Length: 413
Image (tube, rainbow, N blue to C red; front, top):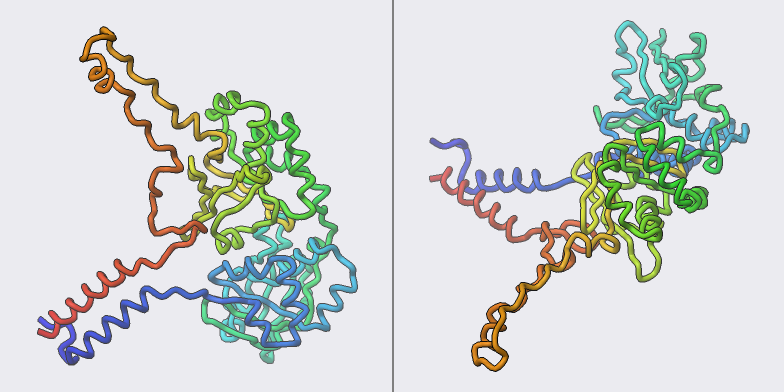
């Protein structure tokens, strides 16, 4: 039975080839920076989305609405001389975690809707201050206001800037949404208590080791320039402690510093910046680096010894990010020898040195060949290059294409 009775053989083949290559193609869903770059009136708003790293977070979301304001409205905000951290909170309030295109704005059920924002998602918004109330008014007007604003509408829908249905909607509103909570002074990086934050989120043992070893000073000295820390949780670190105690004091310090990176990396940045990453322990010939890779939403940190996954976000406020991980990161510089011990040679048989059999016996009972070190073993994934990126597997693609072609030919017969 033919599945495409009305098609010629060439048409059926063309359709299958098109479907095949369409399934192989992958594109970014949206890029807020490129969208706004086409409109000079939003240049200041666009600039601060990038400066606060909100742009990367917006691009990582699949269903979102950005309430942009023009340069005049941004001037009003900047005249308040807020810190960059408070500005980020204010702009986060203008990113709705739902899709509101023009049509939906004018068809809101019961005339009003409450939407969570990226500010609410940070966990730093007190109460319901991270929600925005959207009201469809008479005469086609749509009003916007923070939830904790006594019902007053402070901004209004101006126009649709760009819409990719049910993925991203970029709209213009008339003014900045006022929020005393978002504008409140936010502690700068130097005021952050890194160990307290780790301890509250299940990484107390790791925080205590940083303090007792003095390596916390290196972490704190790095904060202003950017810091990303990966913390093994208490349940992960506890069974590892015997290995930790077997290290020298210098080795223990290197292991702890190996869990820090001297740049800020949000989740979105980790997903896009796959490859080798240096750490606080990196020092000249002592590389102490690891590979960052991801599979969809799962981000992994790969050393030559273990592969750890990021399991949670403890803090993500530029310039500091702290994540929990499910394994202790073990650098090859410290654990290569201990994980690949050299086996003792088998004892040679007792033989008369003058006997002609002695040399033969010695040859038969020579030490067995030594096992390969982790560095000498073949990589598990031969499709990955040294930078952590995946190479194009031409052979596999050709094989699949031939299968599709043969299938098409059978359909025509």
